[in-house]
Image (cartoon, rainbow, N blue to C red):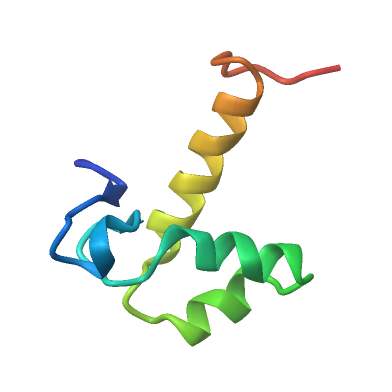
Length: 74
C-alpha cells in the first residue's frame, strides 16, 4: 500500500483525521474495536475503507506503541 493512511483536511470534517480517500474518521475504527466489534464488522459498516487500509493503520499504531520498534515484545 502506498501513500498516506490518514488525511487531515480542514475542509473534511473540520480536520478530523480520516482514512485517506474517505470521510471515515480513524477514531471510528478504534471505537468499534473498543466495543468488542470485529474488524469485519467495521469494514461492513464502512465499505469505503479497505481491509488493507485498516490493517496498515493498526500495524502502524502497534509499532508506535512499541516505541517505534517493529519487533515482537516478549
